[in-house]
Every structure is written in structure tokens, then in C-alpha cells.
Length: 357
Length: 133
Ligand SMILES: [Zn+2]
Image (cartoon, rainbow over all chains, first blue to last red; front, side, top):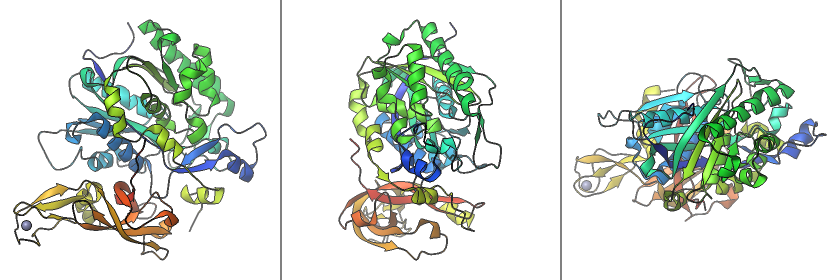
């Protein structure tokens, strides 16, 4: 078997979502920049407030995950944050998050803690999730937290500006017997593909336009998802839900169709139309939306994609513990529905696109 | 930018850590070393639950140095459920929708950044309680 799975059985014991409350409509961006002749790729996207960044958003998602897990923060042995919008170039987001949630702080021999920031474009969060599965699965730890969170930016007027959103999710991995969804296996696939990149000290990324589709998003997503299903011996019909990375609405719909998933299997986890592309947060946040509504016994496929490029595919099976835990923190749909629409002028201010000095 | 001072304040800023008097149970935020009720010096750290009621508020449009980028913003006095009154920014709400007596909860947000190359200071603010269902 080439499916990846630790010797010790593990699962998700808690999860938490976060989406900031501001929205800008895609048609408002089109009003300013034009270029919507071919239609806009999403309806609207989430925009963080002036006092929000990847750290503060991760803290709220992490607190939500802890509330659902019902464990003490000092029981965590890792807090890992995957993002391409860490506020500092040098200084981990993860130590700030770990202190804020009470996992770190004050020398205490009973509670060693790992913390690190992960980077792999939009795959950074699921890479951290793979590592959390391995850490708990190896027996080095009982509980580990993996976060995927981003406040993505596109160059004003660039196609990316329509979709670069903000949000993400936190997961706590623990022993399978205490899980709300146990882990069946994962399959990861990476190649050197220069579809999207940002050099050091550059504010906005470069991307390969049409190049982002076939050799990048679809090749990696389909390869990882098929690899996982083949190795586990599953068909799309074995899954109640599937969640794919969602740089827009069309890409995950096309990937799902090519793999043989029906529209209703992906609809609950497809949030890009309402909040945009949340990068490292996208697939992980789609999965929190699904966990909010899934029934015990439901099997879930989660497949990320990150430019550069690679995909992580996971299979989870929901347990009856979901029923008592999901109500302990705000639902993903609540965050998506909480919205305050802003115009391009406020958006430019909130996203630091105005040069003040 | 006093890095040492910001670092010392992180427990109270990140987790609303105050103190509780081991003799009479009085709770303090910000933390105190001497109990104002019984004069005991036997105080222990205490993490507040982060919920309370908005006691008063004002909208700031002429801010102190370092907070210009956030105007206009709301500063309120929050009466924590455990007793102490805390001054903090009120976030995630439009000024017109803020009401005295409103139930609020603690969130961790960016308080300020020292320019483009300095430290970012994070800490507590309060927002109207969300039910999230
Ligand atoms: Zn006392």
C-alpha cells in the first residue's frame, strides 16, 4: 500500500472556522477595474478588518477548535500555522497563537510544545495537518493542532484581486477513539511547477494565467484524489462529501466532475463563491462547513492544492462524537452569513492599498 | 517601542490574565500584587472568562499616536462577569449598533504596529457576543 497512514489510529477531535466579516462584491471590483466581460469568478469575497491578520484569525479558529475538542490547551504538543500571509517575514505566527490560546507560556515541564509556521502556497495548512497526523500517529504526542489561514492579496486590477479572500480553519488531531472523524489515510503528490509565486520582499504574487489550470491545479488535485481512492479501494460513491481547493467556483466543480463526484457531494464544502479563495484556509474551511452538517458514518474526501505545486488528499469518517461537539463553537455557515458589504474605497483602506507617506 | 514592556504584558493582553486573592477571593484585572479588599499579598494568577457587559463607550476620531490607522474606533468600559471593569476597544460592530448594557466577549486582535518594520502588538478587544448557530 502506498496510502499514508500512521501505525496508531488518529482522527480529528476538534475543529474551528474563522471568516472575517467584511465582504466586497466582485462586481464592485469590476466597476473599478473593468475586465468583467467574461463574467466574474465569484460573487463576493471576505476581507479582514484593520485589526485582523493571519495571527488573530488563527487565534479565533484555534479557540473554536479547543472548545469543540474539550481538551486543555496545555495538552497540545504542537501548534502549527500554514499560511502565505504570515504578518512577519521572520518571527513565527505560531508562537503568538500558541500563547494566546494558552498552549504555550510559563516554563512547565509537564507541557512541552512544538510551534512552527508552514509554507507551501495554498497547501501549507494541509501539510501541517499531515504532520499533526504523523506526530500523534507516532505516539510522540496525544494532541496536535494544524491551522490553515490566509489574508491573501492580489495586485490591484489583477485577475487575482477578484478572488483573493480571507479565512481559514484549525484542526486538533488526537487519538481515533476520541475523534469526531477518524482518519483512514492520505495521499500526497508534488512536482516542481512554477504556476504561481512571490519573490522575497514583493508585495503581490505573479501567476501563470492559463498555466494555473491544467498542469497545476487539475493535474495535482486529480492525481492525489485518485491515488487516495485507488489505494483505499473507494469510488466517489463511497464518499458523502468531497472538498477541493477552491481558487474560484469553477475549478473545484470541474475537478469533481472529472473524478466522478456529483454536484451535491461538493456543494456544502464549496464556499469560494461567497468568501473567495482563502488560500491555505480554503479546503480546510470547506471541510469545517461539511463537518458542521455531516452525519455519523459519513466518509469525507478532503483534497488541497498548493501552487508550486502539490496536493494532499485525506479520507475521514465521521463518528457519533460529532453530534455533541459541533454545537460548542460558531458554525462555518454562521461566519459566512455574517457579512458587512464594503465599497472599493474602504476595501483599499482595509487592505493597505493606499500609500499614506 | 518598548519591547520588554509589551512582552511582560502578554499574559494579560492575550488571555485576560489577572489575579485572585487567595485569602478573600477578590479578583483583579489588570493584575494587582496586593488585595484592595483584605490587604493580603497572597495573590495568584487568574484567567478571566472573557465575558461581560458594556458599561460605557465612546467613539475615538482623534486618537493617540500609533492608533491613527484605526480611526474611527470605539473604546468602551467592560464590566467583566467576575467583577473588574476593563477599558478596551470594541470591535466587529458599527458604532451605530453599540449599546450600553450589551453582552460582549473577548477576542484577540491587533492593537497597533510600530511602523512597517517594528513589532506588532496583539491583545484583547471585545465584541458583541456571537451565538454562531
Ligand atoms: Zn483579599
